[in-house]
Length: 125
Image (tube, rainbow, N blue to C red; front, side):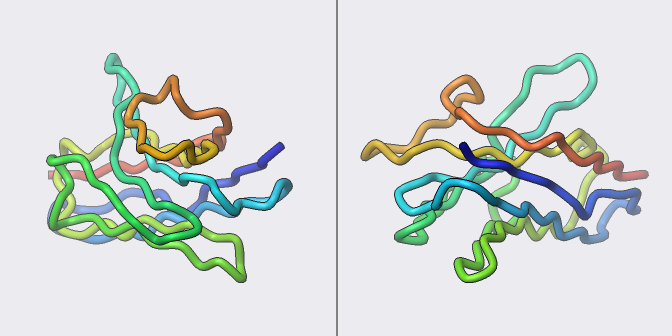
């Protein structure tokens, strides 16, 4: 079992920045993929970014490329999402997720086994 706890959400003006944190505990994360997803009201949960825990490889949704950066701190078992140049359309509940790495990356929320409780990000115009 993997337990995930997000923090760092809040209210920010358009153009501002936030850093989300995800604390992971439980099962060792070696050979896991850590992802960030988001869900706006009335919309499906969508992929934002992922990082391969062991190798550090990353992938981003086109909508956040160049603005968001995902990283991990292995000794601390933490995953971060640095969000810059925020836009009102980035407003959503952001979730941290984990899934065992099987040789390829998956971008659908249904593929991930473990989830945090979510943290709200609101970007005002």
